[in-house]
Image (cartoon, rainbow, N blue to C red; front, side, top):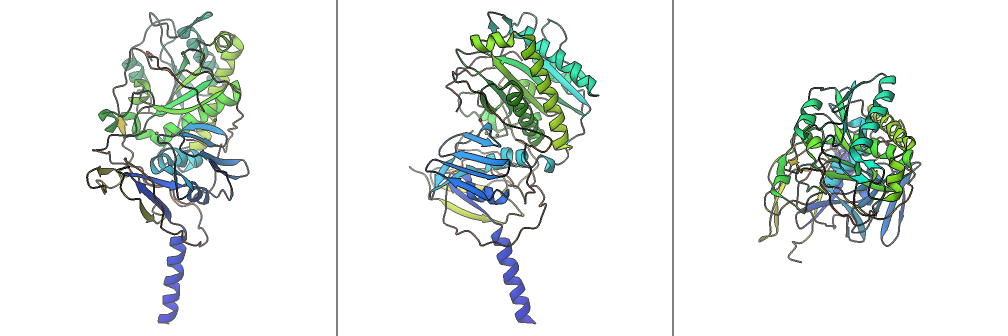
Amino acid sequence: MPRLLLLMVLFLTAAVRGGDWQVYSVGGRDYLSMDNIAEFYNLPSVKRSEREVTASSGLRSLRASANSADFFINNLKFILSYPTVVHDGKICVSRMDLVKLIEPVMRPSAIKNAPTIDTIVLDAGHGGHDNGAMSLWGPEKTFALDVVRRAKALLQAAGYRVILTRDGDYFVPLEDRVRIANQYPHAIFIAVHFNSGGWGTGVETYSLAPRGVPSMMADGPSVSDLVQCTGNARDAENIALATASHAALVVKTRMYDRGLKRARFVVIRDIAIPGVLLECGFQSNPYDGKMIATPLYRQTLAQAILAAVTNYRRAVGGSGAPAPRVETIARDEAPAVSTTDYDTSTGRTAATAAPTPASDASTDEKPAGDEKPAGDEKAATDAKVGSDTKAATEVKPSSDAKPSSDDPPPKKRKPRPAAKAEPEDKAATDKTAKSPAPKKPAAEAPAPAPAVKKKKKAS
Protein backbone atom coordinates (compact mmCIF):
# COMPACT_ATOMS: atom_id res chain seq x y z
CA MET A 1 0.00 0.00 0.00
CA PRO A 2 2.76 2.53 0.88
CA ARG A 3 4.46 1.61 -2.40
CA LEU A 4 1.24 2.20 -4.34
CA LEU A 5 0.81 5.56 -2.64
CA LEU A 6 4.39 6.52 -3.52
CA LEU A 7 3.82 5.60 -7.17
CA MET A 8 0.68 7.74 -7.26
CA VAL A 9 2.53 10.71 -5.79
CA LEU A 10 5.35 10.35 -8.33
CA PHE A 11 2.84 10.12 -11.18
CA LEU A 12 0.93 13.20 -10.07
CA THR A 13 4.15 15.16 -9.61
CA ALA A 14 5.24 14.33 -13.16
CA ALA A 15 1.85 15.42 -14.48
CA VAL A 16 2.06 18.79 -12.74
CA ARG A 17 5.62 19.43 -13.88
CA GLY A 18 4.63 18.51 -17.42
CA GLY A 19 2.31 21.51 -17.39
CA ASP A 20 4.82 23.96 -15.92
CA TRP A 21 5.60 27.40 -17.28
CA GLN A 22 9.31 27.92 -17.78
CA VAL A 23 9.95 31.55 -16.88
CA TYR A 24 13.31 33.06 -17.78
CA SER A 25 14.51 36.31 -16.30
CA VAL A 26 17.48 38.47 -17.32
CA GLY A 27 17.85 42.08 -16.23
CA GLY A 28 14.64 41.90 -14.22
CA ARG A 29 12.10 41.13 -16.93
CA ASP A 30 10.41 37.76 -17.28
CA TYR A 31 9.91 35.92 -20.56
CA LEU A 32 8.37 32.65 -21.74
CA SER A 33 9.35 30.76 -24.86
CA MET A 34 7.10 30.54 -27.89
CA ASP A 35 7.36 26.76 -27.59
CA ASN A 36 5.95 26.94 -24.07
CA ILE A 37 3.17 29.30 -25.17
CA ALA A 38 2.30 27.19 -28.23
CA GLU A 39 2.01 24.07 -26.09
CA PHE A 40 -0.26 25.84 -23.65
CA TYR A 41 -2.65 27.07 -26.36
CA ASN A 42 -2.73 23.70 -28.14
CA LEU A 43 -0.90 24.87 -31.27
CA PRO A 44 1.05 21.71 -32.13
CA SER A 45 2.34 22.73 -35.58
CA VAL A 46 5.48 24.78 -34.85
CA LYS A 47 7.62 26.04 -37.73
CA ARG A 48 10.94 27.71 -37.02
CA SER A 49 13.45 29.65 -39.05
CA GLU A 50 16.52 31.51 -37.89
CA ARG A 51 14.53 34.68 -37.18
CA GLU A 52 10.90 33.59 -36.85
CA VAL A 53 8.64 31.04 -35.25
CA THR A 54 5.02 30.26 -36.13
CA ALA A 55 2.75 28.03 -34.08
CA SER A 56 -0.61 27.04 -35.50
CA SER A 57 -3.59 24.73 -35.42
CA GLY A 58 -6.17 25.15 -38.15
CA LEU A 59 -7.02 28.83 -38.47
CA ARG A 60 -5.47 29.71 -35.13
CA SER A 61 -1.88 30.89 -35.13
CA LEU A 62 0.80 32.87 -33.31
CA ARG A 63 3.85 34.33 -35.09
CA ALA A 64 6.85 36.11 -33.62
CA SER A 65 10.16 37.40 -34.97
CA ALA A 66 13.42 37.60 -33.06
CA ASN A 67 14.08 40.88 -31.23
CA SER A 68 10.93 42.45 -32.69
CA ALA A 69 7.81 44.01 -31.20
CA ASP A 70 5.69 42.90 -34.16
CA PHE A 71 3.53 39.93 -33.20
CA PHE A 72 0.76 38.26 -35.18
CA ILE A 73 -2.26 36.45 -33.80
CA ASN A 74 -4.37 34.80 -36.50
CA ASN A 75 -2.53 37.01 -39.03
CA LEU A 76 -3.61 40.19 -37.26
CA LYS A 77 -0.78 42.51 -36.26
CA PHE A 78 -0.14 43.51 -32.65
CA ILE A 79 2.70 45.63 -31.30
CA LEU A 80 4.13 44.05 -28.17
CA SER A 81 4.92 46.18 -25.18
CA TYR A 82 8.38 44.63 -25.11
CA PRO A 83 10.29 43.20 -28.09
CA THR A 84 10.89 39.49 -28.06
CA VAL A 85 14.28 38.14 -26.98
CA VAL A 86 16.20 35.06 -28.05
CA HIS A 87 17.37 32.74 -25.30
CA ASP A 88 19.03 29.40 -25.79
CA GLY A 89 18.00 29.56 -29.46
CA LYS A 90 14.34 30.12 -28.62
CA ILE A 91 12.26 33.22 -29.29
CA CYS A 92 10.64 34.39 -26.05
CA VAL A 93 7.77 36.76 -25.28
CA SER A 94 7.50 38.88 -22.13
CA ARG A 95 5.28 37.67 -19.35
CA MET A 96 3.45 41.03 -19.43
CA ASP A 97 2.57 40.55 -23.11
CA LEU A 98 1.44 36.98 -22.48
CA VAL A 99 -0.92 38.02 -19.69
CA LYS A 100 -2.12 41.38 -20.99
CA LEU A 101 -2.30 40.61 -24.70
CA ILE A 102 -2.06 37.01 -25.83
CA GLU A 103 -4.30 35.47 -23.16
CA PRO A 104 -7.36 37.78 -23.51
CA VAL A 105 -7.04 37.64 -27.31
CA MET A 106 -6.76 33.88 -27.50
CA ARG A 107 -9.43 33.21 -24.85
CA PRO A 108 -11.78 36.20 -24.58
CA SER A 109 -14.57 34.02 -23.27
CA ALA A 110 -12.43 33.39 -20.18
CA ILE A 111 -12.49 37.09 -19.23
CA LYS A 112 -14.15 37.43 -15.85
CA ASN A 113 -16.71 39.97 -14.70
CA ALA A 114 -17.18 41.59 -18.10
CA PRO A 115 -20.36 43.70 -17.96
CA THR A 116 -23.25 42.92 -20.24
CA ILE A 117 -23.43 45.38 -23.12
CA ASP A 118 -26.56 47.19 -24.26
CA THR A 119 -25.19 50.65 -25.07
CA ILE A 120 -22.52 51.89 -27.49
CA VAL A 121 -20.91 55.29 -26.91
CA LEU A 122 -19.50 56.65 -30.17
CA ASP A 123 -17.00 59.51 -29.99
CA ALA A 124 -16.34 61.54 -33.15
CA GLY A 125 -12.94 63.15 -32.71
CA HIS A 126 -12.41 66.93 -32.66
CA GLY A 127 -15.23 69.34 -33.62
CA GLY A 128 -15.96 73.07 -33.66
CA HIS A 129 -12.76 75.13 -33.74
CA ASP A 130 -10.73 71.91 -33.64
CA ASN A 131 -10.60 70.62 -37.22
CA GLY A 132 -8.26 67.74 -36.52
CA ALA A 133 -6.15 66.50 -39.43
CA MET A 134 -6.77 68.23 -42.75
CA SER A 135 -6.75 66.87 -46.29
CA LEU A 136 -7.48 68.42 -49.68
CA TRP A 137 -10.99 67.02 -49.34
CA GLY A 138 -11.96 68.21 -45.89
CA PRO A 139 -11.28 68.16 -42.12
CA GLU A 140 -11.06 65.12 -39.89
CA LYS A 141 -13.86 66.40 -37.66
CA THR A 142 -16.39 66.23 -40.52
CA PHE A 143 -15.48 62.73 -41.66
CA ALA A 144 -15.37 61.34 -38.12
CA LEU A 145 -18.84 62.71 -37.35
CA ASP A 146 -20.23 61.22 -40.57
CA VAL A 147 -18.80 57.80 -39.66
CA VAL A 148 -20.36 57.73 -36.18
CA ARG A 149 -23.73 58.86 -37.53
CA ARG A 150 -23.67 56.04 -40.06
CA ALA A 151 -22.58 53.57 -37.39
CA LYS A 152 -25.34 54.80 -35.09
CA ALA A 153 -27.97 53.94 -37.68
CA LEU A 154 -26.56 50.43 -38.17
CA LEU A 155 -26.24 49.77 -34.44
CA GLN A 156 -29.74 51.02 -33.66
CA ALA A 157 -31.11 48.77 -36.38
CA ALA A 158 -29.33 45.90 -34.61
CA GLY A 159 -31.06 46.76 -31.34
CA TYR A 160 -28.41 48.76 -29.48
CA ARG A 161 -28.88 52.02 -27.66
CA VAL A 162 -26.35 54.48 -29.13
CA ILE A 163 -24.95 57.62 -27.50
CA LEU A 164 -22.91 60.19 -29.44
CA THR A 165 -20.51 62.41 -27.50
CA ARG A 166 -21.18 65.02 -30.18
CA ASP A 167 -23.80 65.09 -32.91
CA GLY A 168 -22.83 68.31 -34.64
CA ASP A 169 -19.91 70.56 -35.49
CA TYR A 170 -19.10 71.79 -32.00
CA PHE A 171 -16.21 71.25 -29.62
CA VAL A 172 -16.53 68.85 -26.68
CA PRO A 173 -13.68 68.85 -24.12
CA LEU A 174 -12.00 65.51 -23.49
CA GLU A 175 -13.20 65.45 -19.87
CA ASP A 176 -16.80 65.85 -21.01
CA ARG A 177 -16.45 62.95 -23.43
CA VAL A 178 -15.22 60.82 -20.52
CA ARG A 179 -18.07 62.01 -18.29
CA ILE A 180 -20.64 61.10 -20.95
CA ALA A 181 -19.16 57.61 -21.38
CA ASN A 182 -19.09 56.96 -17.64
CA GLN A 183 -22.83 57.55 -17.35
CA TYR A 184 -23.43 54.17 -19.00
CA PRO A 185 -22.01 51.21 -17.04
CA HIS A 186 -23.28 48.59 -19.51
CA ALA A 187 -21.59 50.16 -22.51
CA ILE A 188 -18.46 50.15 -24.63
CA PHE A 189 -16.72 53.26 -25.97
CA ILE A 190 -15.40 53.67 -29.54
CA ALA A 191 -13.55 56.84 -30.57
CA VAL A 192 -13.20 57.52 -34.31
CA HIS A 193 -10.24 59.46 -35.71
CA PHE A 194 -8.19 59.83 -38.88
CA ASN A 195 -4.43 59.97 -38.85
CA SER A 196 -1.89 62.44 -40.17
CA GLY A 197 1.85 62.34 -40.81
CA GLY A 198 3.57 62.49 -44.17
CA TRP A 199 2.86 59.59 -46.48
CA GLY A 200 1.76 57.24 -43.74
CA THR A 201 -1.02 54.90 -44.74
CA GLY A 202 -3.30 52.28 -43.26
CA VAL A 203 -5.38 51.69 -40.16
CA GLU A 204 -4.33 51.24 -36.55
CA THR A 205 -6.10 50.76 -33.27
CA TYR A 206 -5.22 51.94 -29.76
CA SER A 207 -6.01 50.20 -26.51
CA LEU A 208 -5.10 51.52 -23.06
CA ALA A 209 -1.56 50.66 -21.97
CA PRO A 210 -1.40 48.41 -18.90
CA ARG A 211 0.07 49.83 -15.73
CA GLY A 212 3.87 49.92 -15.79
CA VAL A 213 4.00 49.88 -19.59
CA PRO A 214 5.07 53.07 -21.41
CA SER A 215 2.63 54.52 -23.90
CA MET A 216 3.68 53.96 -27.48
CA MET A 217 2.83 57.60 -28.11
CA ALA A 218 5.19 58.87 -25.42
CA ASP A 219 8.91 59.60 -25.63
CA GLY A 220 9.98 56.70 -23.47
CA PRO A 221 9.15 55.52 -19.95
CA SER A 222 7.71 57.91 -17.39
CA VAL A 223 6.99 57.79 -13.66
CA SER A 224 3.33 58.23 -14.57
CA ASP A 225 3.43 54.83 -16.26
CA LEU A 226 3.30 53.35 -12.76
CA VAL A 227 0.07 55.12 -11.84
CA GLN A 228 -3.16 53.21 -12.13
CA CYS A 229 -5.71 54.57 -14.59
CA THR A 230 -9.45 54.18 -14.23
CA GLY A 231 -9.52 52.29 -17.51
CA ASN A 232 -6.98 49.70 -16.37
CA ALA A 233 -9.69 47.94 -14.40
CA ARG A 234 -10.89 46.82 -17.85
CA ASP A 235 -7.53 45.79 -19.34
CA ALA A 236 -8.75 42.42 -20.58
CA GLU A 237 -11.98 43.77 -22.05
CA ASN A 238 -10.08 46.72 -23.59
CA ILE A 239 -7.74 44.48 -25.55
CA ALA A 240 -10.54 42.12 -26.57
CA LEU A 241 -12.58 45.07 -27.87
CA ALA A 242 -9.52 46.51 -29.61
CA THR A 243 -8.84 43.17 -31.29
CA ALA A 244 -12.40 42.80 -32.54
CA SER A 245 -12.30 46.42 -33.77
CA HIS A 246 -8.91 46.20 -35.47
CA ALA A 247 -9.73 42.91 -37.17
CA ALA A 248 -12.99 44.37 -38.48
CA LEU A 249 -11.18 47.47 -39.78
CA VAL A 250 -8.51 45.44 -41.57
CA VAL A 251 -10.93 42.95 -43.08
CA LYS A 252 -13.60 45.47 -44.13
CA THR A 253 -11.36 48.26 -45.46
CA ARG A 254 -8.50 46.04 -46.72
CA MET A 255 -6.15 48.82 -45.77
CA TYR A 256 -2.55 48.28 -44.65
CA ASP A 257 -2.49 46.82 -41.14
CA ARG A 258 -0.39 49.13 -38.94
CA GLY A 259 -1.14 47.09 -35.86
CA LEU A 260 -2.90 47.24 -32.53
CA LYS A 261 -0.98 49.55 -30.19
CA ARG A 262 -0.99 50.87 -26.62
CA ALA A 263 -1.43 54.45 -25.46
CA ARG A 264 -2.98 56.57 -22.71
CA PHE A 265 -5.21 58.97 -24.58
CA VAL A 266 -7.53 60.69 -22.12
CA VAL A 267 -10.72 59.29 -23.62
CA ILE A 268 -9.63 55.68 -23.13
CA ARG A 269 -7.57 56.31 -20.00
CA ASP A 270 -10.23 57.81 -17.76
CA ILE A 271 -13.34 55.86 -18.71
CA ALA A 272 -14.67 53.07 -16.53
CA ILE A 273 -16.02 50.98 -19.42
CA PRO A 274 -14.16 49.07 -22.15
CA GLY A 275 -12.85 51.51 -24.74
CA VAL A 276 -10.85 51.75 -27.96
CA LEU A 277 -9.59 54.51 -30.27
CA LEU A 278 -9.59 53.88 -34.02
CA GLU A 279 -7.33 55.59 -36.57
CA CYS A 280 -9.09 54.91 -39.85
CA GLY A 281 -6.59 56.16 -42.45
CA PHE A 282 -4.24 59.07 -43.15
CA GLN A 283 -5.61 62.46 -44.10
CA SER A 284 -2.06 63.46 -45.08
CA ASN A 285 -1.75 60.69 -47.66
CA PRO A 286 -3.42 61.55 -51.03
CA TYR A 287 -4.55 57.96 -51.53
CA ASP A 288 -6.02 57.56 -48.06
CA GLY A 289 -7.36 61.12 -47.97
CA LYS A 290 -9.27 60.79 -51.22
CA MET A 291 -10.77 57.51 -50.06
CA ILE A 292 -11.75 58.90 -46.64
CA ALA A 293 -13.68 61.63 -48.45
CA THR A 294 -15.93 59.07 -50.17
CA PRO A 295 -19.28 58.09 -48.59
CA LEU A 296 -18.61 54.47 -49.57
CA TYR A 297 -15.46 54.24 -47.44
CA ARG A 298 -17.12 55.91 -44.47
CA GLN A 299 -20.04 53.51 -44.75
CA THR A 300 -17.51 50.65 -44.76
CA LEU A 301 -16.05 52.02 -41.53
CA ALA A 302 -19.52 52.14 -40.00
CA GLN A 303 -20.05 48.52 -40.98
CA ALA A 304 -16.69 47.64 -39.39
CA ILE A 305 -17.83 49.24 -36.13
CA LEU A 306 -21.02 47.17 -36.17
CA ALA A 307 -18.99 44.00 -36.83
CA ALA A 308 -16.59 44.90 -34.00
CA VAL A 309 -19.40 45.37 -31.51
CA THR A 310 -21.13 42.17 -32.58
CA ASN A 311 -17.96 40.06 -32.40
CA TYR A 312 -16.83 41.54 -29.10
CA ARG A 313 -20.18 40.94 -27.47
CA ARG A 314 -20.27 37.39 -28.78
CA ALA A 315 -16.72 36.61 -27.70
CA VAL A 316 -16.65 38.19 -24.27
CA GLY A 317 -20.13 37.85 -23.12
CA GLY A 318 -18.72 38.74 -20.20
CA SER A 319 26.00 43.85 -20.28
CA GLY A 320 25.83 44.57 -16.42
CA ALA A 321 22.83 42.33 -16.68
CA PRO A 322 22.49 39.71 -14.01
CA ALA A 323 22.83 36.05 -14.77
CA PRO A 324 19.69 34.53 -16.27
CA ARG A 325 17.29 32.99 -13.83
CA VAL A 326 14.99 30.10 -14.68
CA GLU A 327 11.89 29.70 -12.63
CA THR A 328 9.33 26.93 -12.86
CA ILE A 329 5.74 27.76 -12.05
CA ALA A 330 2.89 25.30 -12.13
CA ARG A 331 0.72 26.11 -15.08
CA ASP A 332 -2.47 25.76 -13.15
CA GLU A 333 -1.13 28.53 -10.98
CA ALA A 334 0.21 30.42 -14.02
CA PRO A 335 2.83 33.14 -14.05
CA ALA A 336 1.51 36.22 -12.40
CA VAL A 337 2.55 39.66 -13.50
CA SER A 338 3.31 40.69 -9.99
CA THR A 339 5.66 43.61 -9.82
CA THR A 340 9.33 43.36 -9.22
CA ASP A 341 11.90 45.80 -7.98
CA TYR A 342 15.19 45.34 -9.75
CA ASP A 343 18.39 46.39 -7.98
CA THR A 344 20.94 47.16 -10.69
CA SER A 345 23.78 47.19 -8.17
CA THR A 346 23.20 43.65 -6.95
CA GLY A 347 21.47 42.18 -9.96
CA ARG A 348 18.71 40.84 -7.76
CA THR A 349 15.05 40.78 -8.46
CA ALA A 350 12.59 40.77 -5.60
CA ALA A 351 8.85 40.45 -5.80
CA THR A 352 7.25 43.42 -4.11
CA ALA A 353 3.62 42.46 -4.09
CA ALA A 354 1.32 39.57 -4.54
CA PRO A 355 -0.97 39.56 -7.56
CA THR A 356 -3.94 41.82 -7.21
CA PRO A 357 -6.82 42.46 -9.58
CA ALA A 358 -5.82 44.39 -12.64
CA SER A 359 -4.43 47.71 -11.64
CA ASP A 360 -2.00 49.34 -13.97
CA ALA A 361 -0.62 52.69 -14.90
CA SER A 362 -1.85 56.04 -16.04
CA THR A 363 -0.13 58.91 -17.63
CA ASP A 364 -0.78 62.53 -18.27
CA GLU A 365 -1.04 62.08 -21.98
CA LYS A 366 -3.62 64.76 -22.44
CA PRO A 367 -2.56 66.89 -25.33
CA ALA A 368 -4.47 69.57 -27.08
CA GLY A 369 -4.54 66.84 -29.66
CA ASP A 370 -3.67 63.16 -29.47
CA GLU A 371 -0.37 62.31 -31.09
CA LYS A 372 -0.54 60.25 -34.22
CA PRO A 373 2.10 58.22 -35.96
CA ALA A 374 2.90 58.27 -39.62
CA GLY A 375 4.61 55.97 -42.04
CA ASP A 376 4.84 55.08 -45.66
CA GLU A 377 3.95 51.48 -46.28
CA LYS A 378 0.72 50.16 -47.64
CA ALA A 379 -0.80 46.72 -48.02
CA ALA A 380 -4.04 44.91 -47.66
CA THR A 381 -4.20 42.29 -44.94
CA ASP A 382 -6.54 39.39 -44.53
CA ALA A 383 -7.26 38.81 -40.88
CA LYS A 384 -10.53 37.15 -40.20
CA VAL A 385 -12.54 37.63 -37.08
CA GLY A 386 -15.80 35.84 -36.61
CA SER A 387 -17.89 34.66 -33.78
CA ASP A 388 -15.12 32.48 -32.54
CA THR A 389 -12.14 34.64 -33.31
CA LYS A 390 -10.69 36.47 -30.38
CA ALA A 391 -8.26 39.07 -29.57
CA ALA A 392 -6.13 40.94 -27.46
CA THR A 393 -0.83 44.10 -26.53
CA GLU A 394 2.90 46.79 -24.06
CA VAL A 395 6.89 48.98 -23.12
CA LYS A 396 9.32 49.44 -20.27
CA PRO A 397 9.14 51.25 -16.98
CA SER A 398 11.95 52.73 -14.99
CA SER A 399 14.44 50.44 -13.32
CA ASP A 400 13.59 51.37 -9.73
CA ALA A 401 10.00 51.12 -8.71
CA LYS A 402 7.84 48.67 -10.56
CA PRO A 403 4.15 48.38 -10.21
CA SER A 404 2.46 45.47 -8.69
CA SER A 405 -0.28 43.73 -10.50
CA ASP A 406 -2.38 41.69 -11.72
CA ASP A 407 -5.36 39.76 -12.98
CA PRO A 408 -6.03 36.36 -11.50
CA PRO A 409 -5.10 33.62 -13.96
CA PRO A 410 -7.81 32.11 -16.15
CA LYS A 411 -9.30 28.84 -15.04
CA LYS A 412 -8.21 25.63 -16.54
CA ARG A 413 -10.75 24.43 -19.04
CA LYS A 414 -9.73 20.88 -19.77
CA PRO A 415 -7.41 18.47 -18.05
CA ARG A 416 -4.18 18.03 -19.96
CA PRO A 417 -2.21 14.76 -20.33
CA ALA A 418 1.03 14.45 -18.45
CA ALA A 419 4.10 15.61 -20.35
CA LYS A 420 7.79 15.65 -19.71
CA ALA A 421 9.07 18.60 -17.75
CA GLU A 422 11.25 21.02 -19.70
CA PRO A 423 14.85 21.38 -18.53
CA GLU A 424 15.32 24.39 -16.34
CA ASP A 425 18.27 26.03 -18.02
CA LYS A 426 16.86 29.05 -19.79
CA ALA A 427 16.79 32.80 -19.26
CA ALA A 428 15.62 36.17 -20.47
CA THR A 429 14.98 39.69 -19.31
CA ASP A 430 12.27 41.62 -17.49
CA LYS A 431 12.32 44.95 -15.66
CA THR A 432 8.69 45.08 -14.87
CA ALA A 433 5.85 43.31 -13.41
CA LYS A 434 4.83 39.75 -13.38
CA SER A 435 1.31 38.73 -14.08
CA PRO A 436 -0.68 35.56 -13.94
CA ALA A 437 -0.23 33.59 -17.08
CA PRO A 438 -3.16 31.73 -18.45
CA LYS A 439 -4.47 28.41 -17.33
CA LYS A 440 -5.18 25.59 -19.55
CA PRO A 441 -6.70 26.81 -22.75
CA ALA A 442 -9.53 25.52 -24.70
CA ALA A 443 -8.45 27.03 -27.92
CA GLU A 444 -10.32 29.95 -29.33
CA ALA A 445 -9.44 32.59 -31.79
CA PRO A 446 -10.76 35.33 -34.13
CA ALA A 447 -0.04 42.42 -39.27
CA PRO A 448 6.28 46.18 -39.81
CA ALA A 449 4.91 49.54 -39.40
CA PRO A 450 6.86 52.36 -41.02
CA ALA A 451 8.77 54.92 -39.08
CA VAL A 452 6.38 57.28 -37.46
CA LYS A 453 6.04 60.92 -36.75
CA LYS A 454 3.94 62.13 -33.88
CA LYS A 455 1.07 64.48 -33.91
CA LYS A 456 -1.20 65.62 -31.10
CA LYS A 457 -4.88 65.00 -31.15
CA ALA A 458 -7.71 66.72 -29.36
CA SER A 459 -9.91 63.81 -28.66
